[in-house]
Image 1 (cartoon, rainbow, N blue to C red):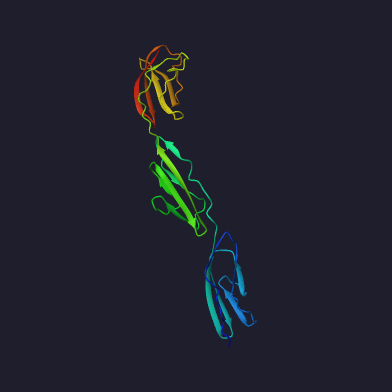
Image 2: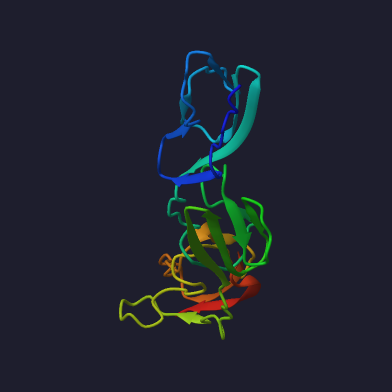
Length: 227
């Protein structure tokens, strides 16, 4: 009998395409049978999922088999690891670049290849996400805020002349835990999220004591005079 000449061709990779026709190019003489690994019995099949496809073609006494691997992929979408940040203290966090990790390779700044990265220190972090269709990357820098106040004010003069009007102890926008005591040790002011807004609250002139705690300045104690 006639020998079956079967060749499905080389393995194929497709970017942003949805289907591929795998053709045996064998004439169906009526006595030829086709048995595909996905159950189809036609001379050719259209596939739309990545995978290995094989076919067994028999005609008379002649049998031939061949296999082809077809891969479909999309170019990785652009993503962001987040905005750069400057912080007093770093809370550990997980960086995650894409929603679906299927079919993508990851490479982080330290050479690791997981789809997420645990950040426990300040620094610059970047990741490249790639497949055979493309490469996308992003970088984030998380810096430590270097803040050491030379000295806190030791006097405030709440007379609306804009000099020494407020007790300024921290960086704008970052809150501190502040308590003010009078000289008898009585608490006269307290704020868990103090943002440099205390002007003495029309307390009598004199010496007061402050106690302050924040991520940026640590813990400090001292005296403040309202004049």
